[in-house]
Length: 200
Image (cartoon, rainbow, N blue to C red; front, side, top):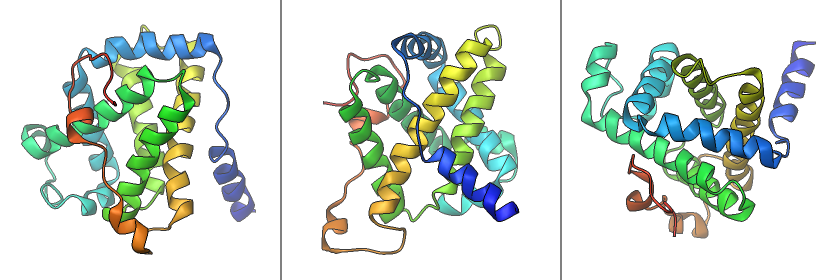
């Protein structure tokens, strides 16, 4: 029975529900407040992720041996990665009305993590859950049930688009074309400041 429930959970996660225009607006409005504190929120998300799921640190040579949350908070490498994560999410939020751009950005993230970094896809489900948890706590007044529902769809959108790259080519397997995969430009995804567009 557990296996069937697990398979149903995976199947549910692999289908992202369409967001209404109202839900997209809710996400963009909430995110504008979150993104005003981009680096701090990103660091909070990553620290909780690594403290609660320490096996995820195996993919980060610069801070995989860190145990102390205060040490993690001071880590320049962790802060840099937090900015990249938040920058990628910002690009998705800014382009919610352009499904092709959203898919393209998240496919690049997925391919880089599948092929270059060999990250297991389950960590994206965990990370997006931690992201929602931290945002809901830090912006509790904004996180009404309506906002929660919209962000649950956003979480699913991120996850389904990222893991689509894993289905194309599972971690550890490579082909001639995989060596040509590049990560999203750091110039486009590392900034924690509002821009007209983070992806050109």
